[in-house]
Amino acid sequence: MSRFIESILIPTDGSDGALAGAKRGIALASQIDADVHVLSIVESRFQASDLDELDLLSFEENAEEAVEAVAQLATDHDDEIAVTTTIREGTPFQSIREYASRREIDVIAMGTKGRTGLDRVLLGSVTENVLRTARTPVLAVPPNPDEPAIADVPFDRFLLPTDGSDGAAIATDWGIELASRLESSIHALYSIDTSPLGDERESDELLEALESRGEAALDAVRERGEDVGVTVSGSTVTGAPVRVIPSYATENDVDLIVMGTHGRTGIGQWFLGSVTENVVRQADVPVFCVPVSAQEP
Image: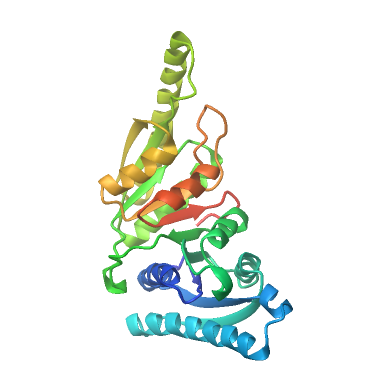
C-alpha cells in the first residue's frame, strides 16, 4: 500500500507544548511510515535587536537542543523513521509555512501552547496563524498533563464534524483515509445551532430543513466510509458547534477530531473556519485541521 502521508513537519521551541505535538506527530509518522522533519525557528526580530552575541548564541543553541530532543524521541521510538532537522531564522509561522511548501510536506504537527516572551514565541498564536495560512493539514495538539508515551498514543476513535460543505468534504476524505490506514472508527457529527432562530413557525420550518440537510451530510460520510470499509456512525445534535464538538469529544473518549478549516457561513451552518480555531483552543484532544486547498489524500 502506498504512503498517502510521506512527510510530517514538527515545529518545536523546546517547550512541553511542543513536545506534546511532537509525540503525536511521531506516533502518526511511525504508524503510517512517514518521514519526520523537525524545525526550530530563531526569530528574525531577535537578530535585528540589540542582543549581544552571547544572547544570540543562546537562542541558536536552544534551537539546536530543541530539534535534537525531538529527533532523539523519534529514533528512540522507531529507528526506521527518517528524520531531518533544520534551524531557520525568520518569522515563525511564515517560516513553518514556507518550509512545508518548499519541502512538499503532507502534514504539520504542532502543539497549541508554547513558550512566551523573549524565550521564543513559537506556539499558541503561531499555531493559529499556521492554521489560517497553511495549504496542508495541521495536527494541532493541546497540552495534556497525562500525555501517553508515544507507543501508547491512541488513534482508535475519530470525530468528524460535517456541514456538507466543500470544506467538510475534503476533511471527510482525509479523515476516512486516515481511519482506513490506522484501522480507526469514525463518528460523524452534524451540529444545528438554533440560537439565531426567531419566529417560532419559521424556526420550525428552518429546523426541519437543517435536520434534513444534516441527515444528507451524515449519509455522505457513511457512504464514503463504506466505500473503503471504514465503520462510520453518525448523529445530529442541537447546539453551538464550538461548544458541542469539544464536549462530544471529551464525553465519548474521542482520540482525534478531524475537521475542515473552511465551510458554510450564515445560519445554514457556520462551524468551519473560525469555529475550527475555537475548537482547537477548547478541545482536550488533538484536532486534525484540513484546509479546503489541501490535496486529495
